[in-house]
Image (tube, rainbow, N blue to C red; front, side):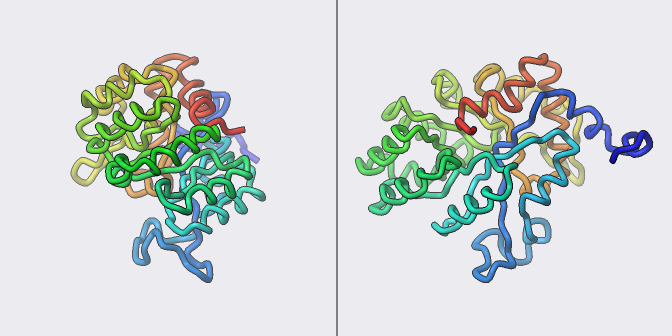
Length: 291
């Protein structure tokens, strides 16, 4: 139970954030257990930040004081059965509201895997690397499989930086009904003609999950340092297509979770209560259709 004294000792972010939004839905976390008998393909042993048991109970302890109410897990493992592992984990951990799986469209196995995993309502979509998209975009079977994804009401997360943006324009030209979430914005450089073109497409969403930067030996949490790139994303995607993601625990390489949250909360609070509600959960509901 929090006493008056313990509340005063909490970081400022912990005291201010819960009341800023009616809920906070983190659309980008990774869960894994290196001590499993089969181990994990990622992260690699020797990584002092990431190579440790990272499960929902740890996430809840860290984020509940900050007002986080749920998360979408993005599967980084290429092992097929790790998709099921997360879905099984979600059965006993309601903080997980959905999974962005790791399946490979354009392969003979994709259709069967999609049929299997979409039976679980927690499968919300899949994620693809920009290089994979570029390599497979000319293949008719790749487009057909992504059409299956869209027809099933599922979305596509994309990861890969600014270099992939022209390929995403071409993909959305081919499949305008496919919902897409661009991971880990802002990029360096923060904007481009292709990003602006994608911003004009109503089913493309921007996941603002890559804000904080290390400069020398420090990471600033002053909003003024990031305002320009955040203003660009606001200008491109508007109030209703920016979504919150932390990229936890990878974000721990840069800054503690509370600092990651603080900067974007400061920015969207300044935009007003409606902007806060849209960014921290309403837009993710439209992008991912979690329940």
